[in-house]
View 1 (tube, rainbow, N blue to C red):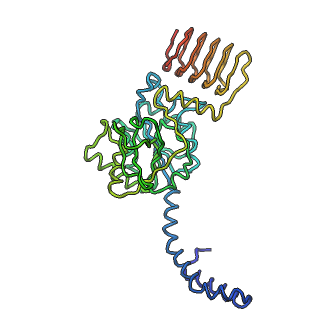
View 2: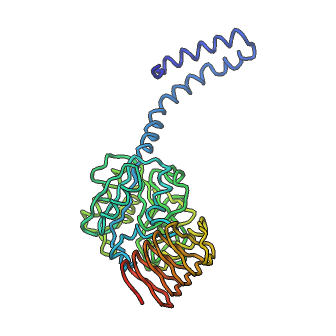
Length: 383
């Protein structure tokens, strides 16, 4: 049956009223009071239904942009051979931790802006997931704003969620995208000079600063953004690029949003529950610790001592070793007569006769006979 038009709804309403009028004296009072009010409410509902429907349809067509083109300088030498988002912590790549909660939003498409070692990202996504994915190559590393600008070029107007590829946010993403037409994820930090900073008044963001020397607030921008209309963001990013405006030598997304705020667009702040930075070794190890506390899996390894929380892949082998706490050991790794704590051991790495603490050992790296903190890149050998 087709959808009823407003006149049809009114006819049905009055038939129902007549029935009530004949059969129940008490309902007559309701009939008299509502004879004028209810039809007007129906007309108002019919007036606003298209607007509500359009809002729902726009969110249903949500697209997600994840920029992963960076070189990962602060995580070298690991990023010489593996893109930063594919470094494994707490049992899976950083990128997997980012993507997993986003799938509940049922996005129409996820767009990855790739660059350095981008083919590894493409291969991983195609081999692991079934969602519709698109890859946009960024050949010039001109900043986050430029990366988003590239991703927007072939998009029709609609809602977009931007999530940085080296930050794991813990929040209710459904509430986040319903919070307003333009939303930025924020969290209070001790030293806001390291981040983009938002100035908030009357529950709206009135100014944004990128890594200011004298911050006007302690609310850090944590790499989570929502825009109901992508065309608005496209317009303001184009303005920043046309003006040649750069902060720290790069085209910044925060500069485009600063223009939006000045022009009267309402940008709502959203305080996230928690967020984990994976941009350098120290923060990556800290993130590994926090994620292991949430869920750690311990397999039985006779002959070795396991101190939770840890993650040990099923294909990893342990011999006469003490592992933990806060250790993540990836697929195919071999640990022999070693003591390891607060460390990440990546795929197919070998650690023998060693004592490691606060260390990051890359894919296929070999470490033998050492007692230290190590930052060993992929396919390297120490000892």
